[in-house]
Amino acid sequence: MNLGVQSWLRMQHYPHFLRKVLRQLGNKSQNRSSSTHRDGNPHICIVGSGPAGFYTAQQLLKGHPSLRVDIFERLPVPFGLVRYGVAPDHPEVKNVINTFTQTANNDRCSFLGNIQVGKDITVTELLKIYSAVVLAYGAAADKLLGIPGENLPNILPARTFVGWYNGLPEDKDLKVNLDTETAVIVGHGNVALDVARILLTPVHILAKTDISDYALEALRKSSLKRVVLVGRRGPLQVAFTIKELREMIKLPECRPVFHKEDFKDLEKISPDLPRPRKRLTELMHKTCFEPTAADVKLWNEANKEWELKFRLSPVEVLSSAGRVTGLRCAVNKLDGSSFENQKAVITDEHVDLPCGLIFRSIGYRSLQIDPAIPFDKKHGVIPNEKGRVIGVPGLYCSGWVGRGPVGVILSTMTDGFDVGKIILKDLAEGHIPQHCRPGLQGAMKILEERGVKTVSFSDWKKIDEHEIQMGEKFGKPREKIADIQNMIKILTHEK
Image 1 (cartoon, rainbow, N blue to C red):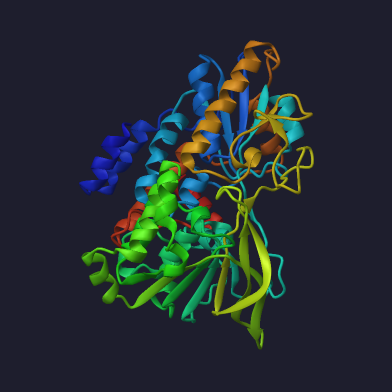
Image 2 (image 1 turned 90 degrees about the horizontal axis):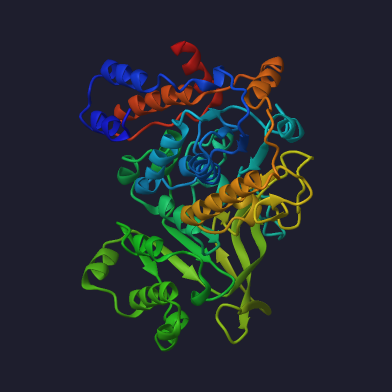
């Protein structure tokens, strides 16, 4: 069924039974994971249903008239980072799900959720039954600070905190103590600003988003009044983008704290910067020295604040009786003539930042989900050449697992398209077997023998419909189900 019609029906609050009938009409070809396909056409397996997986699938289906794609996902629900990584107050970014749904609805595409590749079925097995396998499972681990006291309670990875407020099943039980006035976030990227914004946004605004119910309740009780964002280098090296910065500057009931000594000479440098960096730098400078009257009025009425601190490297977590009391940082100097290549050099000077909660937001890293996958543990990526995994014919990688956790959805789209084109080229040149392979039929046989309950895309639509119904009761777009067993129960009940 046309996605625009679905959205219109929801907006018009049509009765549940009518939406369900229309959904079933649109789902008539969606339960394909229960059927099998064995023909002479190429059959590709993609591991991971986030942006990298879906964009690769889109390119493959577009570029070959009879090729089939099966998308495997460890969770019962699709869309990966779009569902569980995009901030709840950024619904427009999630519109890409409409495109992914169109891909999943293609008769030559199947979605199989609730499958742990490496455990339920191995990569070696997949390589035997598919023409090619694409690893697109993203980056599910975070980098450590490597400092004393890092293992204390209330020192959290930004990644798991994002998963917590977004309803990611594995992060729903994260212990977050918000009974403190100050939090420190180590990192100057978009994820760091996302975390700061969620911590400081008035709860009545968040209540209208798809934020998890338990996170919303915790934020209602929060004592936080101040968030400090710490970076190793200077304002010319921040990794966040202008959109996220502008949102923070305009955040209701909150004011930014910028120190003039950090920005005083930037107006002399900014004209020579690349355009995106120039606009970002000019906004920081203007916020510090020339705020608008509307901004000043907003900030004077604020009861919370966020602060940017530069040229600091964490060296120790301060604590008392097992509780975090602060973060000790070394003061850095910048070495290098060009802002792009300047490095932070630690000095003997130190500053202490009092706080009761610390987030590390210094980058993600991928994991080796199967010993058959070549893996660079130092950099947390799969070694590859243009998406071809080195040393394993027929094995490819797409997205963060191959190039590292950098860029936004747009850059992942480009990467997914490029890897798809490489696979199509290898098919055309005979580097990928064209003879008949079991594909989905072979995979389902193995999974059924091992008692693995798979979730189809039509199953996902039932979960989707249930979440939307629950959200309507509270004036939210949806109420995400954060427990895998509860997802499965919904499907069992429906059947």
